Length: 216
Image (cartoon, rainbow, N blue to C red; front, side, top):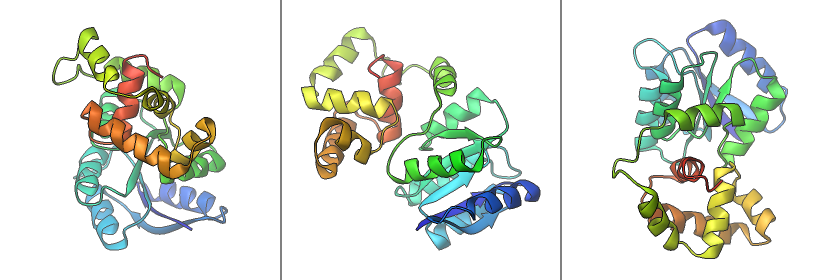
């Protein structure tokens, strides 16, 4: 059972999404928050698998809440869910460790599929959104240029480059394993090695790196 905390400052939206997810046999909404601070408190007390996080909430917004949750509970996956087409906030949330972004007008089955995907370690970023996000990404802090990108790629084995490409496509460890005919444990080890060699914080950042530099 995938345990979910839902955070949105509009009760009608919370109730609507909760009703949709109640139809999924493998997903359980264990808590609902009306603002960012409540979302953090519920995440700390309930330790869910996934937090569905509205990006705009009073007091503490979704970006700040994502940062707070991920700093203490890095194993909790945060999925941004919003009606707003706000590129800057989306980028900020991804940089704070969010595992993807969806709009609230999606059908319940697509939201459920996204929850399952991020729970398995995948990244959810629909292509139109990915293109916009990458266009708004700041330059790497170290000013990574073409030569530096090549140098970083040369640190990776051929298999790790293949895994990085699939990471950039948002695949989970299980999907990567199936695509490359390797075990899920081996895929997980490759992802950990990639994160270390690229000097990024997590698999979401590795996926964004792959998209930004044309690897995916």
